[in-house]
Length: 132
Length: 349
Image 1 (tube, rainbow over the protein chains, first blue to last red):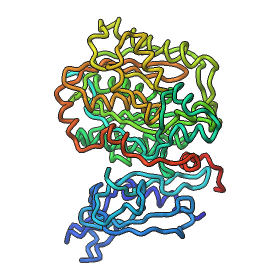
Image 2: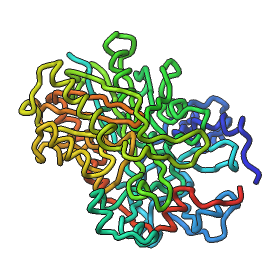
Image 3: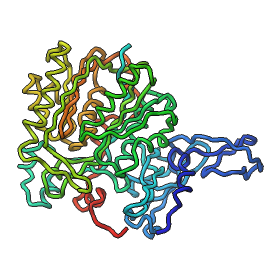
Image 4: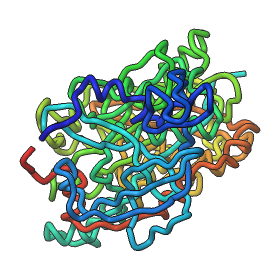
């Protein structure tokens, strides 16, 4: 299976692990995933911006045909969660899809996202689950 | 102010398997198994969880409960016997998962189920010496048991984290005592997927000798008696051992039961007694004294005497899931899902 390279994963650790976004110093626009240039005002001056670890479920869908890295996790529940100023896409875990409702409180959890075979790196990152 | 527990966080994965479902798979009489171990069900990690993710969740809750700035943490020690990597620490992953500074002492500790409490001991020393302001000790496991063997009924998953410091202490460490020896009660060789037991060594020469030895040691050396304690918490490989240790030491059941969690989540190894402590701290009153005795095979015990302070009331009010809430928040899985979630089904990779 083709995975993100180890150096690229390592560079993305603050975003993957802790949801560190970027905010434009000039116009205040927040970006997640982080960007290197503000698409709103064009400024290249961006700073780290910590997203909250709780938010509201905007919408979700259930995938039964899934990417190869997730074949053993069918069905895959993918949701859009509003975290402060941005909406973030991610996997929803520990939930029965029939019980999920837009508007409900969600929390960010830390999980294994991609495991590179038997000997490679375990790549961790954020997922969402209903707030207990 | 004495060094002590500033804050704590616990994490129990949401999935459970009932003892009767394990027994049905392997042809055991479920009532007999429950009578032997007093474990009715046990926690099971999700397919995408491991000792790292469990440690992260517990530690995030500990920082949140005490409103502790991660940048003030000067040491992170993880006790585990289920590392996802043979070589690559959990503790270094925690640095970035929690946003700790890079100037943080970080190491994984191994002494079967006792290692996390050794992390507490080491961090207490670092805080007492003034080398660090706060330290984070984590106990995390997705413990192994051969399917169909006795451990299959108890080995489970969970994590706890304790912020240790001098400022804002909710439970002071009044005394610490340790009791260790070379006792071949339980081991897992490099590369072996499951541990083995030394026949007949699990109880008297291992658990009871060390747990009772450490408890008696701390009470005799520092002048405590049973009546001084509101609670006594012992490592809990099953539901019977801690109650028997309490009887040997003279503790009445009502002082021990609040710290018992094994009956409904199984043995979370490095999080076992420390999960019991989290549950007790969530109901303790200022002035209560707690005896905590951990145990790790191989074998050894650490005994702690804690004195609960006024700050516990503030910590109890924090918006962090309580152990009792997690015990009740569960999804039952069947034996096949249990094997899948525990990564025990061989797949092409």
